[in-house]
Image (cartoon, rainbow over all chains, first blue to last red; front, side, top):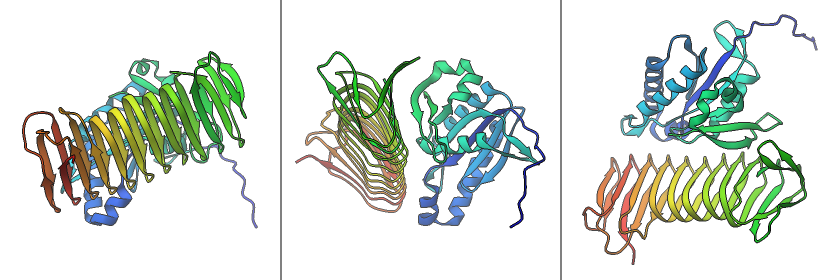
Length: 174
Length: 217
């Protein structure tokens, strides 16, 4: 076996990393087909793109979810709250567009247009604990954006898949 | 107080005691209060009645007995059982959630585990494929993709909102209830036994689940 060593350090970028996904996407696709799934994904992306503040971008589409990056911590939470407000009453052919979001602050590696690293993984794990319409944030995000604390409710230390130590998670009150 | 556990069974018992005691885990004082940390061994924590607790767990089982204050439990796959509390936020990605009585607001979330809630002031429940049962709530807001939903109320002025995609919905109201209703199923049937009036609101929409509103016998 040929051994490969990690030698070249990729540049990092610091900011808010969000995973925003569609709840029940697997079940929706199985029950209602790929056309509907595609329509939900497109609607979700269109609504999200319209709300992104300057310095924010959609990093990539991941099946039922979007990986987002924001330079500004305050701007991230404001945009995501607005997104949840906007999607609350949206449906496609009678199927509600239920989205949920996990938001973390960190310094992922930059690889082309992509972001990679532990901080990206954390954001993707936190979203699994969110209810439809809910925005969860990590301790790291709260530290980067102390002004958000007044609208947060603590869920406490939680374990996420693949990470040995618990992380602090907060819910943004509606 | 905060309890952090990995794979063990966690039992929190509220009792008429003045101090917290813990068996099977370490008890330390952190910046935000007492912290019980555990590994693979079962943990039993006894706390004064009405104590607020936060539990973070991976798998195993979380059991809360007696009357607690605000209870927050977040778990990866643990089954969660809470007998009685003032407020509840219980989340498990795949475990079952069982709540007896909650005096105030009860939030419950499980992707695939069943959620069963007894008597609550207000229930906010989210599920994907698990079955949802609410025994008695004056206010209930339930969202579920494919699991079935059953919500009962003894309130004469209920506020019940349910949204499903394919899960069937049954709402049980008191015999003489006459709530305002919005009942919409795009594909399956809608049956409503009660008279439509203006005492409360029963608001149910489903794409392909059957909707039934029945009066208690």
